[in-house]
Length: 370
Ligand code: SAH
Image (cartoon, rainbow, N blue to C red; front, side, top):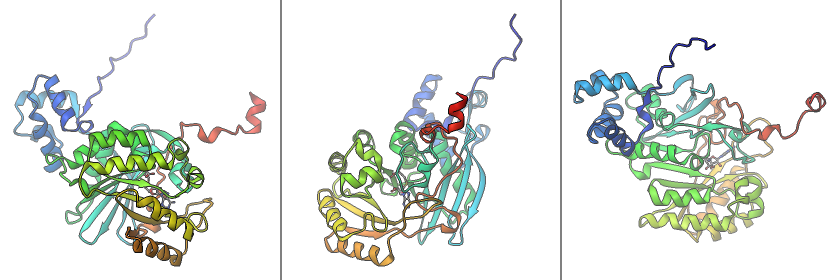
């Protein structure tokens, strides 16, 4: 006999899941004109209106349809921390019960939002604390672009988000479609309208996805290099075993062809006694000469049980000087939000690991029980 259930409510379509192209297609599908997409984007991203009833240039019947079948749903802030230097970190609750983190970094004349792309990370970079959390799932487009919406709402109006870096939790190019849709919204004049120079995707080097990116989107690209030999990079950034340096640099050379004077930003974490020798600097000069590039040295940010130490200031400065003298524009990333663990590689959220990467060694007791 069948038990009686209340009919399941059909799931509403979250309109934050669409970029302009997706939204136009959605409107066409429901019998509307594609230009409704630009109207809706302006309401959401420029006027900060989320109530369909207030969207006065939409017809009454369309507003009724949207009220019944659609929603504009952002992730919810569950923890807010503000560092002494003004950096803000928010933990956001996702629908699956996990948390991801977003960081706002105020600087003279600009404000950068560091955005997460996945719940945890499936790559096991040995110097990154997000990696220790394991991986749960990809964030949706709504959860990615929603980080901008909720952050901007929490900030004073004079603290505008002028730059976005996809450098929070996760590997953006392993969540390709959702990240591209979100980045499209960041750069769309009908939505956030940030210039392509102010939106950056950072990748550990997922080479096939880098080629795809080059084809579909001219967002700025940063590459986490961290080592100049395959031997060391295999250890620090294990995806190098799949896509070694030679293939990575070839993908970078292809990407800079998008536009004249385009450059790749290479990130290089400074690890004491590991990748900070004179020989490493020389290797780096040689490698970076093969592609138009800028270099960003990141002082290593420690986390509990991390096996590394940060290089000394002296070593970092010497490294920078050598690279600059060789004609490679090199900057040292200032560590921000240290007192709230908001710096690079310190974002952890709250992740229930589904990758089982951490379950490789079965505890003896469960072995007996099995
Ligand atoms: N998955 C993307 C984005 C990650 S975070 C990527 O790998 O590029 C952004 C940068 O912070 C990356 O360059 C990453 O390698 C670096 N990073 C990770 N852990 C760090 C740590 N503990 N200290 C300093 N930088 C770190």
